Amino acid sequence: MKRLLYYTGWLSSGGAERQLIYTALAAEKKGYEVKIAIDNPVIHYEDMLKGGGIEILVACPRSITHRTLKRVAALSRIMKSYRLDVVHTFLRQSNLWKCCWRSFTAFQ
Image (spheres, rainbow, N blue to C red):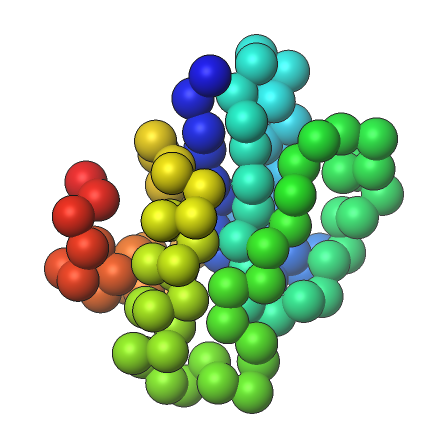
């Protein structure tokens, strides 16, 4: 089974966040093991995720979001511990963090 991680800064009430939830739920229905990593533990769409097997991981608590190395280290720990096959990021800031993270890891 393929393991997917969706990464974004938060799951507030925006449209991109809603699309992330729809995409994650669809992947789970297709048989993928899905996890969502966020920085800010505010989860507006928690009701949509109830009953599913999607785990929410807080990659980097709000208090250290400005510390690049700590964020990259937190994402690296998640990648190593779950042996992910695909990491998909949403929104510009998360894409930037993934680029930083990728430069420090062997993940493609």
